[in-house]
Amino acid sequence: MPLPRLVVLGCGFGGYSLLRALRRGAIETTLVSPRNHFLFTPLLPSATVGTVELRSILEPVRPRLSHVHFLEAAAERVDWELRQVLCRSAVTGEEFPLAYDLLVVAVGAQVADYGVPGVGEHALVLKEIGDARAIRRRVLEQMAAAEVPGLDPDELRRRLTFLVCGGGPTGVEIAGELADLIDDELRRAYPELVGQVRVVLVEALERLLSGFDEALARYTREHFLREGIEVRLGAKVEAIEARRVLLAGGEAVPCGLIVWAGGNAPMPLVRSLGIELVAGRIPVDETLRVSGREGVWALGDCAAVGDPPLPATAQMAQQQGKYLGRALARLLRGRPVAPFTAHSFGMLAYIGGGRALADLPHVKWSGRTAWLFWRSVYLTRLVSFPNKVKVLFDWAKAAVFGRDLSRF
Ligand code: FAD
Image (cartoon, rainbow, N blue to C red; front, side, top):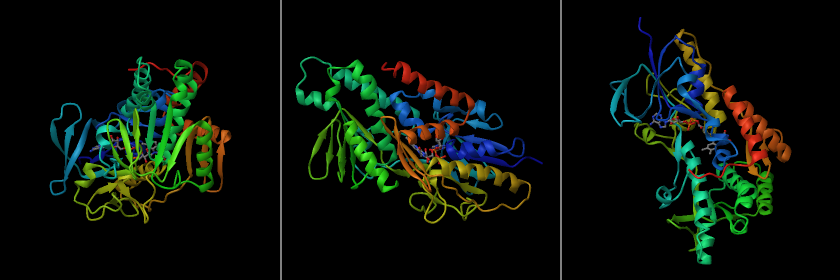
């Protein structure tokens, strides 16, 4: 009898964990993903400034998931009647259908622009590995641009203003990492300019890190003050233009780098499914099944698991992926499946200057020891042994020799 055909859409924390948990041979599995690697996002802000190298946080799909047939393509639509996924090659743009018996949607989310004009055109986001490279390049371009002789002082100030929109964990980590880069490498490489470089963090709410403990958010604010990061709270971004950010109330902040660290919005595929979304996510039952669709599951950032939905985090997506891998194996053997239960291990964030936050279920703590804890947790969570070694070497290399400032 032919094996059932399982199609998994997406190779992030959810899809990758699922495929690693699925036993070889029990099922004919095809993975569809436009990128050919798994990305360890918690270290992406560090990769942006070169504390870790880009390739150290990527796991190439093919060698790691050799039991899976892999297609480098994006799913564009699902034909529920024909039980087919319409895909487009990520390389050639060709379209092709892919039949499934069982389907898992794990395509994650995209960065929400909240309808603010100019985000897509003028701001950089941090979601994929190429984004980290683009931000680093823009910082170095602005440093080079600021060296042009005879610049008007206002234009010099604009070029050296790096503005981050969004005071959630991603925005805070980017601001902290940028401050590290300025303090360590740019201070040595551009001694005349570095005093004029500004990092500005803009947040619409009246506090940073709204998902974190209040005292940790306060600590971050005070730490940023000491580090020279300007924090603007209650400052709503109205529009983004090529060379400035417009805030509510009419203030314009001219800047050379704009990073948009918004929340999550549904992927185009998720919007196209014809399913009524909950908070922009696909509603699923306690075994991650999509109701009303036979043999279809969803997990990770694109799925609303529980009520209220679990947070869109790597640890939740990973737990769901592992659970579903084991659950599918049991289903195929005709065994019953227990409901998914989530375990929250808390939240961590790096805030620069060798300081981090640890918002754990029973302990809230910050500072240098929290930073060592942050590093040890992510070192152990990095998926493969080679990447653990690479990241360890990257940290040592950055501490001893500094970060590389080559622009490419
Ligand atoms: P993703 O990991 O986003 O994976 C989605 C996959 O789907 C990707 O492979 C993508 O290429 C693929 N895909 C997209 N569209 C299609 C399509 N049409 N067809 C097929 N495949 C598609 N979480 C934490 O818990 N701790 C942290 O410290 C942390 N730090 C973060 C830092 C940054 C900069 C970012 C951006 C996120 C961070 N997160 C963190 C959040 C975490 O990355 C996400 O919650 C997690 O990646 C969600 O996993 P996922 O599998 O649902 O989606």
